[in-house]
Image (tube, rainbow, N blue to C red; front, top):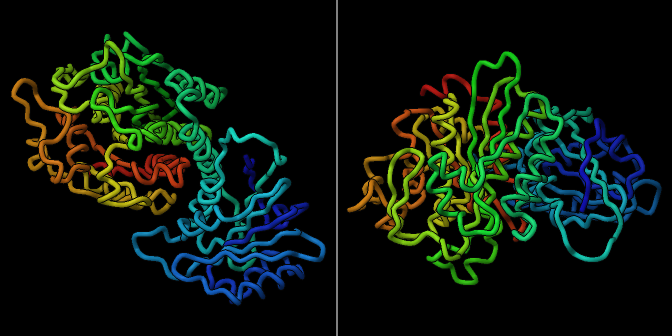
Length: 492
């Protein structure tokens, strides 16, 4: 699969490239941006002439041409629409992603040159290109090595360099997507830890530790242990701790890492089970965000936890009717073993919050199918007990290209859905028509509500994957949230 690199200038990206792809809003193309970005090359005039024949439309347009002269032999132009709605990314990264997926990536070097109207547009556009170029494949045959060189160019033709953090977000986003794409035979809880250790090797101030198997139960994480105890590879809580000198604040990221979800004894049908290798998208997202921040030398400390388990069936599988003791001290009566993600996230969140006492806690999970009904394939649903944190999540989503939209936080309306006659609560709602995604978030929150910590929940069931491939969603969002966190957001 293609290797992604970054060039400081368009000229550097284009040097020796066998093909070139340009992305720009339609109005910038009419004003001659393409000629500036290509330094007046004759083939740029050819491509610009082809582009004039195609209006962008609301979702953009991809046009291509063959270059008969010197320079890249294959040319393509992503014509982005000028207008973009207020709930979309201002950089039009969703359109760039869609168009890049239609580009034929050939062996050799391909230059991708992005028109950056504002500095803040560079990250989501570069992330969109990386997202459209998955790393994982087991297809046979070798068509030759492909390298993608990404360069950002301002409207006046001058270069815009991506920051270290922005580059790491693109790289770690592709890393997270690769884990999502790997089948569970290759991406067990054990392999997830191994891949993380490999990626974290040599990163300053970053340490990796694991709580595994029976130790999970010893730490009173009865939910995580029950979900994963019957699988071949034991349940684990993977912890990445980053402690730079002089850090004054600590954030926390917690991710759902169900490496495969059969539904447990509440068994999914075959159609519902296919694709459940990606039920660890939240864990991949938070770990990818942690790696990006640490590699970019983030100034604040953080703790990142991935609650890893395979929801399998076996002689020791947990059952509907079982009562689990959670890390929070609360008891949960199981009425649906296919509502397992909230159990592992609640335990991981409670453990991190009570052990490390962070200033803010953020959890990410491919939690509910209802999220797709509520906010769709592109926007994750966010729920928070702080208005400032909710607003920051929307802002960080637009800034990094991992879009979000808020749903209600109303414990008094939703907690009753989990009423049990024999335990503190059940794990699945009584009324599936009553704001399921907010209810699922409420279940998780109920295990840390006594701490009154600033908390944000991200349900990313939809945007975690597209066209049966992982997107690395959550890496940009998690990194940008901690990178831009303010005291105001934590207190509002």
